[in-house]
Image 1: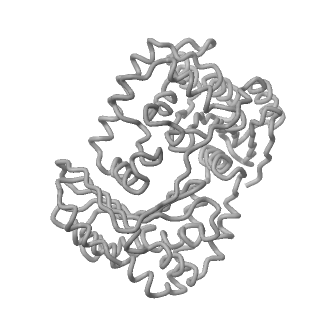
Image 2: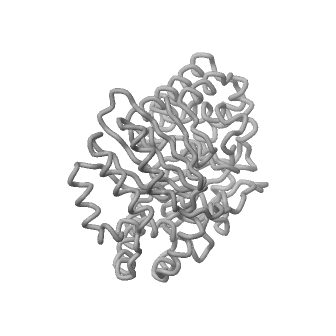
Image 3: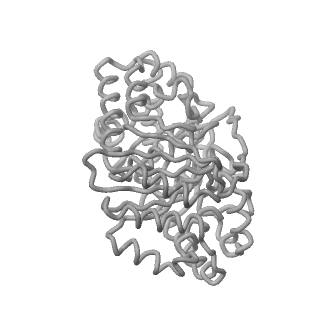
Length: 423
């Protein structure tokens, strides 16, 4: 991935990624803030603020003016809030790159946050919370995060926040959060696809030259302290039990980060992974089961998620734990190791094939580790992993005392489930 990185005088980082043969261009502005940077009373503010950026600027007076301009050139556009980053983006046919930059830069730098729109959007955010509450598969991670990080730590809180906060936020809250968290040193602008590098860089210099020079926000560090397995049940009437079972793991740039990715792929990466074969194909316990790694600069976790029949919850948990035991006890074969590496490397390429995917990938890399880590670098790291590395990491992380089981469904017997958590 060929790219150039520029730093403006105010500290704003700019990444330009020309893509030969591309017919599209994507503009992303990402700032390194999210729900992790909120206190308890602010929880939900970062996400609500993201909504408000589309409600009008001095140049584009309301949401309709913004959407009509982007719709008028056939753009795909959106924004998202995560725990450690918030992004605004637009993808266009390359000929409309100026429009994409004009609109995305304008909403990021000049949003008016009109009080009347805050009142109206409050209802939309509350409906969004209700929508996800009706989709346990999308919210079991909230239960898991509160369990593994603790509900008093920002990482243990939800991104959307509690309804009582949403109902209370005022324009003053938004302005205060914006001033504290949206800073030049904390922000990256990425443009990927077909464009004139000279013209794009000039435009970014022009628009962002007066952007806030404030010190980047800080966050509360997390160090896992766990001495016994834990279970958290959100009792809810559902047609299926959703579960997440996982352990604390490594942060970004840990010396075993690639071995951890390979371990996760062997366990639950794809339809030929160990968990998919054992949980679904052999026993029919779940329609889908997968594992993945979630990472932050100071911490992370390895988790498995599945949706199962209520009566088969214990059997599903026992099956997953048995695979944990096996991968600790016996080194993976050369063939399985190579398959896992090929799965990761192939997925990396497939998911970094378009201008929007590449732009978000680069922006996230800058926010999380300070540099653009290329696909080639990751592939090199993955290919260097040995069977001994995978087993060593499995033995380090997959320990009874570190297990965390989160559940959404009509269950209440935490004691019985806790007794199951043994490796």
